[in-house]
Image (cartoon, rainbow, N blue to C red; front, side, top):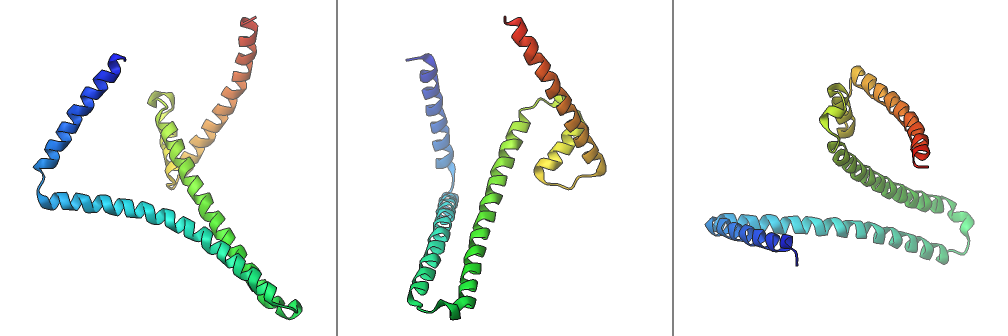
Length: 176
C-alpha cells in the first residue's frame, strides 16, 4: 500500500468527524429541512428520467395506435385526411423530441467548452478577446467590438494553425 492511500483515509475520517459535528450542532428543524431538500432533489432527478421515458413510451404508443387504426380500415381512400393528420401529429412529436435532444446536447457541449476555456491561462489571450469569448459562451449580447475581436482571434488561429503545419514538418526533419 502506498502512503497516499493512508493519508487520504486519515483525511476522510477527519472530514467525516467534522461533518458529524456540524450535523449534530444543527437544530431539529434545520435537519428536517435538509432532509426535505435532499428528497426533493432526488425526486426531481427521478421525475426527469421518468418524463424522458414517458415521452418515448407515449410516442411508441401513438405509433401503435395509428397502426391499429390503419389495420381496422378497409377502404383507405376515404380516410386520407385523417391519415394526413395522424402523420403530421407524429412527425411534429418526433421533430419536437429531436429539438429537445439538440438543445440538451448544445447545453452539455457549451458547459464542456466553458470548462476547457477556464483552463486557458489569462495572459494567453487579451482581455477584450476574453470578454468577447465569455459573452459568446454564455449567450450574452455582443457588441460590434466584441464581434471584431472574435474575427481577429479567428484570423490569428488560422495563422497559427498554418504555422503549426510547418512546425510538424520541422519536427519530422529533426527527428530523423
